[in-house]
Structures are given as C-alpha cells and as structure tokens.
Length: 496
RNA sequence: GCCCCCAUCGUCUAGGGGACUAGGACGUGGCCCUUUCAAGGCUAAAACAGGGGUUCGAAUCCCCUUGGGGGCACCA
Image: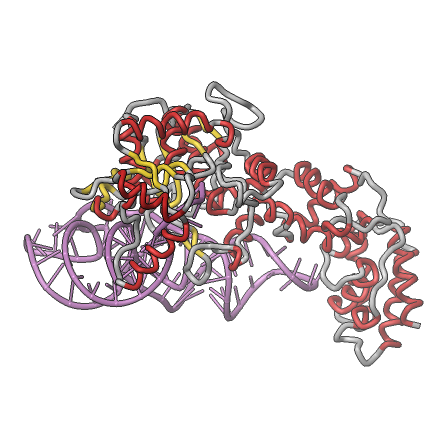
C-alpha cells in the first residue's frame, strides 16, 4: 500500500442536511487526518442538478463547524486543488473520459432511457442480473441505438471486463472479490455533460492526492468498478475503508423515517457538539474496554484505523442523552453559563425565554444559578423549564391544582394557612440565606405539624411555578427576598 | 432474483486460541441518599445465533446454515 502523506476527504452532495451517518464517517476522516498530521479536504459533489437542494452547502459547512471538523482545503478556505466543487471541474472529467474513450476503456452509448428501462424489465422477468447489455459496444449497435432513440444524445460508459475477477483491497474487510462479469458498464459521463460519481470520484481523489477514502459501506458494491476506473486512468488506488452503516431501531439503515437527524437538529435540540462528536465517534470505534467519555484531544491522540469495527451499529438516542448530560456536568460553571445564556436568549419559539425577559441576560446572576441546575439537566433545551422562574420579571403564575398537589387536594384552607404562615415567617427573616431559610421552614413545619416535604412543595410551587425545580431554599437565596415574598403573597391570595 | 458485507447482554462495546465462572457503558429493576427533580453510591437481571470441523484447548481460526444489512440508475 502507498506511503503517501495522509489526505482524507469528505465529499457530500448538496442534497439537504447531512445526517449523522455521513457525519460519523466525516469524523473518522477528520480523526485520521488530525492524528497523522495529514490533511482533511472538503469537496462538494454537485453533479446531479436534479437533486440539488438550495441551502445545502451552508448546512454542510455549518454542521462541520458545529462539530469542530475543520477542513484544510475546500469551500471558503480554498487550496491548491481548487475549485472544490465538482460542477466547476467539468473539464477534468471530460479529459478523463476522452482518455478512456481513446484507450478503449469506454464507449459512447446512444441508448435511450426508454430502451434501458425495457432492457432492465426484461432482465428482471428472466431473473437475470440487471446490467447494460452492451449494444453500443459496436459501431453497428451504436447506429441501431441512435436510430431507435432518434437522437444524437449519448453518454460515456465504462467498458468493464467480462471475465476474471477484481479484488478490492479494503483496509477493514480485507480483500473483497468480485466477478468481473457482474460489473456493469456504468455510465461515467451523463448526456448533460456532467460526470457520475464513478468518474468524478477517481478523477478528483487522484487530482487531490487523496490517500484514504473512508466512505459508507453502501459503496462497497461499486468499489470494483472504481478500482477498474482508477487502473484504466493509470491512477494509484487510495486506501479504501468502507465504514459500517448506522442503523435505526429496526436495524435498517438510519433514515429520516426513524427520525434520523442532522447535526443541526441536534444543535437545535440542545445537544452539545462535543457530546455528539464523542457519541458518534464511538459508533464503530473504541479506545479500550471501558472509556466512554473521550475528549476531542484524546480522540486525536489515540485514533487508529485498526480499532475500527466492521459491523453496523444501532443508534441509541438514550445513550447520547446520557453522554450529553455527562458533558453538561463537566462544563465549568462559567462555560455552562455562557452556553445556557446563549440558549435562553434565543426567541421563545426557538426554545429561549419569553420576550418579557430583557436581553442580554446577566452573566453574574446566571452564574449563581448554574450550580443549582447543572447536574439536573441533560440538554440545553431542558434548562429553560428548570431556570425560567429566576428571570421572569412578573413572577410566576402557579396553577391552583399544582399548588395544592396531592397532600392538600381536599384541604385548600389548610394549604392557604400554611402558606401564609410561611409568608409571615419569610417576611420576618433577616438572614436570607439557604441555610437560614431551610432552618426556618423546618422549624415551621414542626410547629404546624406538617411534613417538611409537603410544606416545601407548597412554597416551591408558589415561588418557582412548578413542582419540579432546583433545590428550593438555594433557589430562593439566589432569587432574593423581595421577589420570593412577593410570589408567596400572590400564592396566598390565589388560594384565598 | 443476483452480488457483497455483517453476526458477543435490549443497545453501544472489550475480547484477536488458554488470563472468560465472558469485562465495561447506556437503558431496566431493587436498595441507599434526599425538600421536588436530578446527580451520586451499592446491587440485580441480561449475550458469545445454530451446526459441523481444526486444536490438548475456541467467543476467538475454517466451512455450512440461519438471521440481519447493503447494492444492482444518465443518484450520490
């Protein structure tokens, strides 16, 4: 195998948001490059104008940026092999096609789509393997095809050998053998002058000096074709690595059907990029028998191709959630505050706080809240419901049912009494600290003959508007006496 | 239909002939902690798909079966 400098690439088509499968492969590409001092190249495979989805390029770039996969060459950064858009490299593909035509490795095919359809239907009925029947391999056949289609429009097809076998060396899977008779005379150049992947990929990977092609295993069946094209063009074949698929819960390839998400959707749901990176990188690769949380630096330091797995992995959202929680808790308070503020300052419809809350949020105030919520939140998006009551300028509006809860469902008067006792006590409290509050409320509960938990819940809902909240007295200490007393008073009124 | 790939707890995985009464993690159950919710601690259940070989010895190597996945476009 070659000793060329390591150069890997991600080569997405602009057909929408890149999903986790392709991103996971990109992570391996990036990791291989970064761990070897090599280069990671981004190339846009925009050769199918029919499938083009506007905005895709930005989705791709933003996904990579979000995950921290910086590219050394490609869109925006340029590079010695620019342009990095295949639609701007047509001359290269035409020249390659001409060479293949001249050397007899390819031929022009005038068959109409209709004829090809018929051909395939016939083959299916006869239970024969589908594939081009070779009509246009001879001048007579070409004439016939032209006559039948009534058009001069043609494609360039590869003339695959009919005998022998082609052995594809895959670093992960070893030598994979294919009978040449099974290799189709694939279209290399379409009638619109654009190349197919089968031509563009060998040409570009050669031109861009790609040393390792890491791509999904769905490409394995066409790998022998690619090898043949590389050879016909006189190019050195890169190291091939076909990564296993990521599967949905039903074990079929992960797709939109399963709610397969793009990186940007994870971002918008409140996941941390380092957690998504960690989780994805561990789908098909492992460091050892126990390490789950691995920093980006350690991934780079320890990544090696020989620990890549061959078998497909089912995507486990619950484990991702757990891992995201791990990363959230591992953040410093300051960093947590920065990220959560960025989230909370978004418009309400995007998961931020209501418009009534003035932006920007106070960093210092938020920093005091962070220790109370950090370990009870798995997603940034969940932070809002845990934290909003701290910021609401007009207080909270608890539901009566919520306030009464189970213990006081049938004794509203008692709840009102307890709460007003708590109010009076609070108003008279000079030392507004969590410790003092806790002590005072415990004593009160004892004096009134109510379980502390029940009393606390009453106060909790009154102050936070919810029955699930960060620790009560600590939250109240941060909120401040004035606001707490106000909210207690309002709750008492609500019950009376 | 044909071709190719894959196969350890429900899921992600460790394991590359003896260290395996098969380890870790997520999830699940139980207990502890506890002002809610989390977090944390302890603990439990849970797997080598089946069958043949090879070998003194197989989760590990080979073959077959079964199962799962992918591919067979002028899409990538």
